[in-house]
Length: 91
Image (cartoon, rainbow, N blue to C red; front, side, top):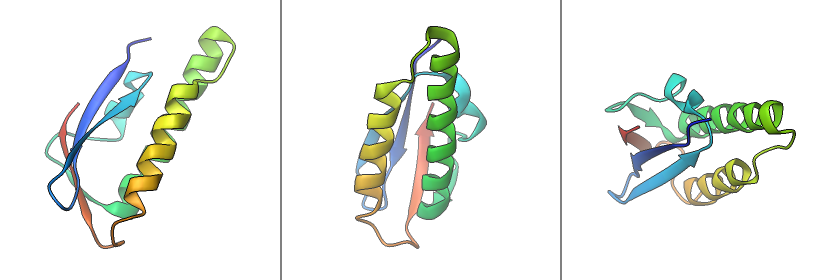
């Protein structure tokens, strides 16, 4: 299962590197795409949950790193206004 790092730019210009234990995130994000914060959170939840389920199907346990990454994303994303935009820099 290939780990994937994807880089995003937050509304204030800060970049973050995010982790997924699966390439499934490529179905939810496209480099160069600008996404409203609520939609970014929605897609992150779906993608990282699906990635964790893939790990569970293959290894018999959910991916704690995917859950931890989602917790971090939700924590900093909630510090920005809902109308903020996230840019996907690379996957």
